[in-house]
Image (cartoon, rainbow, N blue to C red; front, side, top):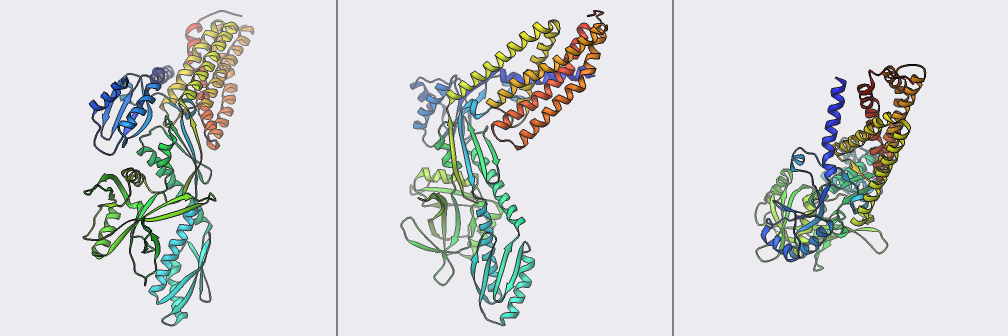
Length: 586
């Protein structure tokens, strides 16, 4: 049974490693929101520029062109970006293995940014702004509650921990009204510590709630970033949280950072507000023409309810964005519009940008103001956006989610494909040289035992590659190759310990047939202890490390597990098969 399990595992990992041996072919992916691009005109444009793709895969809103070399891939991107300016293009890679492996879900190892080339962004997420937003929203809700009690109030102070509310006027007995108000507010805002000092109410937000709010904002930002990257069609991206308020994004294959930055770093969102008169509390924002508009402080609807958005040209040749709302959002818009037919509603566009002091400030602009003619549902459109490219970018951002807190790109790095190819060549050279020197050493020192050690080492390398291919999200990086080379030495070390122990048994007078199982038995505990301590270190590195450190830890950890499997199980099976009945003595 043990032999069957061992060989099944070896065969499984060998099959999963086959696509990695075939490698990948460079591909160019065109994404578009309009109708499918016709293949014949596309191929004609490529032929005119002496470019011939190996194959073309055409799907709804996406066309993939597979080329023989990266130079053809880059040249095709330049040509097609001019021919199809409305399409978003990005570099990708497809497996060169037979189609059968792709159908089975087996793909080559994912290569990291340092091996494939691409763009890396470090984002700063202003998570504390989510707490400020919660405090502001709560103060508005509390003031509405105050008005229902016949009281008037104003906010006298606000900071990161809470706000103070001054009761300025009462239509009835002020003391009784404040007491009733306090009884209503405490259960309604249970996460707040509410105290009373004369006519002033103090609201302090619990620190635990502040941390939960900041953590929630970070998780929402991570999810939105992943959705935005998926909307660009990049399937091999790495999106990782780093620390409390930073996100690392790696986009393998993307060589133009502006393409990704325009979507990933965008902080634009929209909200819908009623237009109010001078007698009501309002926020004042300007249209593109500079005309001030008074808008309600509480929006009718925000971008979080938008589930779909697409850009198009309207009846009068003006760009517009067609919106699709969620079920809850559609109901809210339907109820509001039914009660406000004949009244104006404005679309407020908001985004964060850095001022001349490198401080984040929010800019607002009323991009559309129209009178509600009839009851609206979950589908409607907005105009006044500018050019078609602006409408397309806004639609893409709204489709993938609007950020609830400001995000800035604090660092970006571009790694060219030529540097990635050079890293691959050097990494493979290190592996080949390491294998060759190890083989020579083992064959010279242990001769026939060395053949077993070399065979086990080859099996170990195949299993590592196969396991890396099977693990979702596992990526091979340059430090990962270093871990691979290190694993080779540690795998051979397992055989060295066993072989030396077998030699000791043979010097004590035991025949080879009995020395082999004795040697493995005596060396097993030492080998397991040594590998387990190293494995614990690899797990710690993986848990607390980022980027290169994590890539090294993954390869090292997998290599330690497979080296114990090949060194203690496979090699013993082969040794017993070949010399299990031998009566040779030292």
